[in-house]
Length: 48
Image (cartoon, rainbow, N blue to C red; front, top):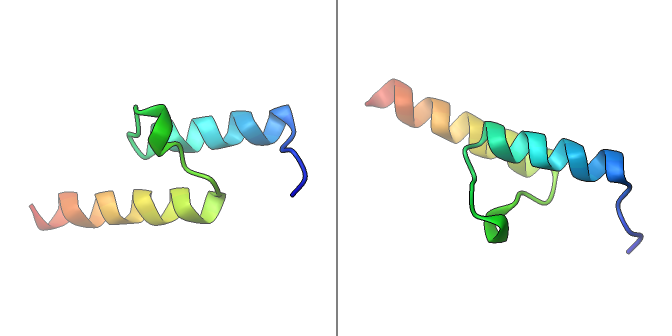
């Protein structure tokens, strides 16, 4: 697997912050994963 570019890493970090992931071990690995977490958090907030 090729190494991600700095721009890709920055985007993943930004998406991780949006998903409220503070622990580096939980840094999302893809845009799809980040979008899924964000959607789940919004759904959870709406239900509560």
